[in-house]
Image (cartoon, rainbow, N blue to C red; front, side, top):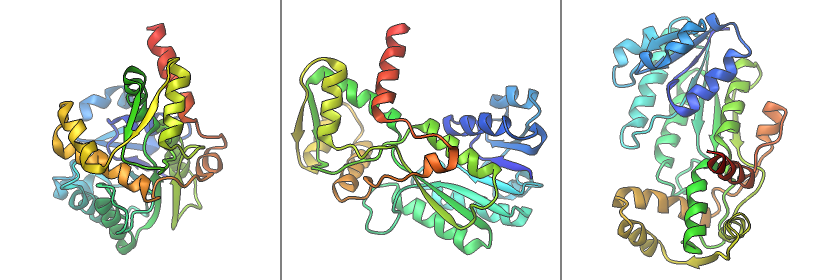
Length: 290
């Protein structure tokens, strides 16, 4: 079966492409991107590289032509991506794609306050309504994004948060890619929603303990309310919309939407997920070696 990966020039897309190319004939791998020139090395390996822009729906059908199963990696524009994803789904239907995977978020229901939730919920519904077979890969927050958080905590001696006792099952981007690639090349995952998580639910005190361990100095948790958290990030130079977006994940953790741990990574890939500690230690060792 020919498979496709959208957003193939992005971080996750490239990781999935590399893994899929290890398991399939390159001629059966279609890589979709707005910047085909960025994937020249993949074309040299025999993969099919095609231009695909979710803002050009009339051309998307050709991009999906001949594809049996596709991975739709969520776009980055929160304001527009529900519409963009819908265009991709409609094009996939018109092109004859049979099965589409989608990178979503844990518990994308109306009660989840994370800023990304509405667009993920809309895309999942569009897939359910499309007639395509679907699989949802509900990735938790990337562990890699916590590396600078831990470094800042070490430098300041504080983890400032409004998450309360809320926990997050941070997952490595590598594990998200491995899970997606496994589903992309296998049958039998239709109609499934997988929570793709790391091995541990991490709360603020766990984060402070990790920073203390790897940094060699005490780090304390400083609880604040949501508005104070936003104000602190803005004072540090972050644009307010991004500060509010990040704070929405603290609220989601506090309200219990991000702490569930699953065995999906191990069940799909045959190996356990990497822990946040592994990611942080590996990053610090790499920095020291550099």
